Amino acid sequence: MSLFKLRRNPLSLDDLTVDLCPPSRRDDLSSECLMPSVERPQHIFVRGQGSWLWDSEDRAYLDFNQGGAANSLGHSPSVLVKAIAAQAQALINPGNRLHHRGQLNLAERLCQSTGSDQAYLLNSGSEACEAAIKLARKWGQLHRGGAYRIITASHARHGRSFAAMSASDGVNLENRFDPLLPGFSHVPFNDLPALHAAVDARTVAIMLEPIQGEAGVIPATEHYLKGVERLCRELGILLILDEVQTGIGRCATLLAEQFYGVRADIITLGKGLGGGVPLAALLARGKACCFELGELGGTHHGNALMTAAGIAVLDTVLENGFLEHVRDSGHYLREGLARLAHRYGQGELRGQGLLWGLTLADDSADAVVKSALYEGLLLNAPQADCLRFTPALTVSKANIDEMLLRLARAFSRVRTAQLHCRNGVAV
Ligand SMILES: *Cc1c(COP(=O)(O)O)cnc(C)c1O
Image (cartoon, rainbow, N blue to C red; front, side):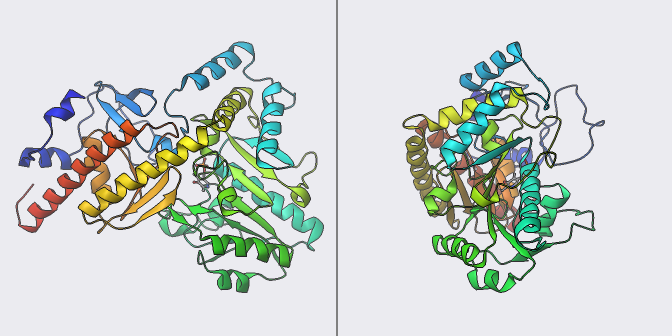
């Protein structure tokens, strides 16, 4: 951390040069054998605690990305470490053809706490969305004359499996590996008439994120989501809410649908549910509970180690005062970001609870993320002009204050670099 103190203002040209060149990897490990997937900085991260991560050089980073909102309780929280260690000691994997306590427990708790009738446990958000699509098609086979079409929203992001990609809007994907699965159409988000117009006899469900994450943290309006719910009831089709990012306390309610005051037929969960381990869930209510024996399966679905983690996370999030803390911290983060955005002439803040997006005055989000990394702050840019903040739900006000300081320095650094570029100074 002392490194960052030394690096405070005033900015020199040297700082900017360093800023624009990725730091060299000082570890002897190479990524040559690793298939390319996402762009990563050169650093190697070795340990984490709460809102902090440390790299192999022992530099500390404040993590306001948290594995893309997966680490709901921060890095290596003791409640998760203990639960996983105890489960590993007792039984790692009885196999998915045998019952174990964790799976039964977590399914029951998820149903009780969300008012659902059935739950199924899987490994990733994409898989949960995939299963939700299958469930809707099954319901269409049984109750809507084989209807199978699913309407989703423009800029939606439901994952990377073929069905999830087909449900998503492909504009931001490098390659969709066409042909995609048939049976999906996309309509503009927050546009009820467009949605209504898109429904036909072959439509079986509408599938939406309550707050579109990858699109740049764009919340549905209450009017829209309530209208969608009403439309689904009137037309006799299913409402699927993808709460992979918004669920499990992220929006200061257990599910985002609660603060909207709507009730979906099918819900997908992922990310925060496992607190950092691969765990996802499919929830169904009432008439949507129509899977039969043999229609679902997966080697690690309901894996004992992962369900132990899920129970620890869910118990923690449901503890007295936890969601209030998320709400308070969310307000504090929002106010701090609004002040900073005003000071630096940035754009709009959107979000809920501890999921926030800040639009920037220009397409500098990648530059800000890189500068923030240099300042010891981990952030994410879902769009070229948007920063996303998904801290641990346990984040403290001190963490938020420190984040704001580092973000201010990152903004200054980018602004100075922009001025130098405009004035023709090579940096
Ligand atoms: C991340 C995400 C997914 C995909 O989850 P994976 O675990 O990456 O497969 C699906 N839907 C939403 C809303 C997400 O944010």
